[in-house]
Image (cartoon, rainbow, N blue to C red; front, side, top):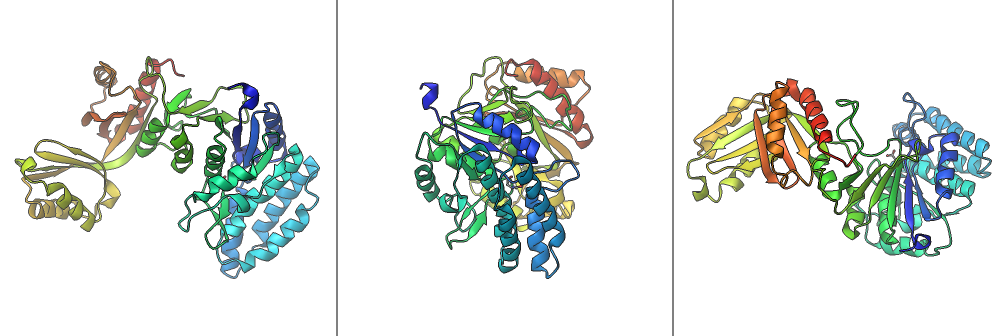
Length: 444
Ligand code: ASP
């Protein structure tokens, strides 16, 4: 497709729009490529680490008001931040009046959603004016089900509202209308969902997601400060990384675009030339079998043994029922020939011995071993199940760094290998594995 005909949906997060200087950068980015047609905005986020996000301040306003207290203090911060933006960008002649209207309406609302949504609403309106675009209120095009999910009618309404390919539009993220006709917000960080819905509605060629990092990192930077950015990652890999503990892209925001295969490009507003990360349906796994390393702790590993387990087809259902009764939930379950292995959050255990006893008696098990707390680490990538020699290499590197895994499991998922280590070896192991995985790849 020729580039002039392409349509991109570009979403900018709270830090990208935290103040007028950031908003100026965003304007330059938006106008630098005519393929950017629908701009989805968050509310202004934190300018400095000690600041509060506008959305948090608005939630505080509702909370204070609902408990009969004055909400003037957080509201004045909201007011002054918007007025500062309006003044510097010379926009928003009506923003003063609108802020006053919001201030007066907050006490009338029983739910926090109206207040919370106003950060995106005002930011969207002022930004549209600043870049000369048409503002489309999310209230009119984005619909949520009663439980806060995307209502399918949003796709048709959004496509209709953004139908002129010659125009530039701004859509505030995070909120829409619920079945009762009231404003309702998605879960926190939900502007990503609004952007994904708009991208799918328009069958966009690209969904850009602008933030304050240059893409998805191979590991948590608090553990691996020099973790590299991944250039390309599949939707499935993102999901796997998140399941094993990584704080990556909002899963609900991937679902709409994954369905129709629209790539997501993560970009950094403060470093727009950095290539970022592409989230795609398929990628070439040659030379880059692993995209990341993530983990969770602490877990207890529970191994339940039963001789001739395959003769007891009800065993799994009975195990699940018993776990439920004692308040346990297994995050990872691995079936062996005569044993089942479960990894369960240590916090859920009240009395290990009592649980062991119940498992032995009620499941008529031969043995039930519960480990000391462990960390579970996933080495994630489309290539982990197919790359011959990867397991050997990982075991070799762990050994050479003096790490003795308690368990190594390969092949239960096509996308990951799982390793468990004592909790005090968690950070060290994640760091060793991330550096080793980076050496395997040209995808960085
Ligand atoms: N402003 C909302 C939040 O802080 C939504 C978003 O930024 O995506 O959660």
